[in-house]
Image (cartoon, rainbow, N blue to C red):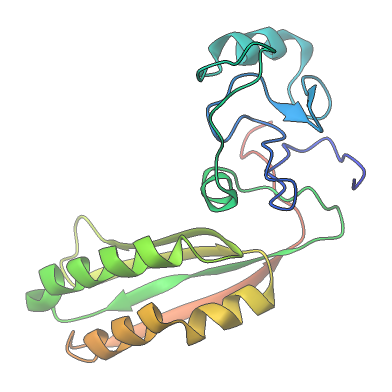
Length: 189
């Protein structure tokens, strides 16, 4: 296991076990089957009891473990921080300006794209959203585990379908940037 960095820990897909912050609603966070309160969760002592008490509980078996399992993709969607200190994350962020008359069509196509993309391996989060004030403005925000995962996303059939549909949105401007993120933490300590 990678050394703990003091940051919140995310689901490890290879073990198919939730390891911290309880991404699957299974009760107390765990690391390798052991409770994970303290430095591993990034919670101070005062917050540990609150986190344990407020964690949603799933159905339990006789040994106290949860019978409910989560998929790796579900855990990836719910948590956003990598366990590997050497890992960096890719963030794609920007905006697309399109014909305001095509807004509803773009929203419908975005729903399908987001649903399918969020199931992809390596996708941490994916949001394409319409601006609430500007009818012709959409914001995009994506988080990816690796360049390979992002590359596979661009080759996915649902991405090709969306790009074909987007040709009819009357795109006027597209400004999307890629960022490599070395660390992630709370906005306020």
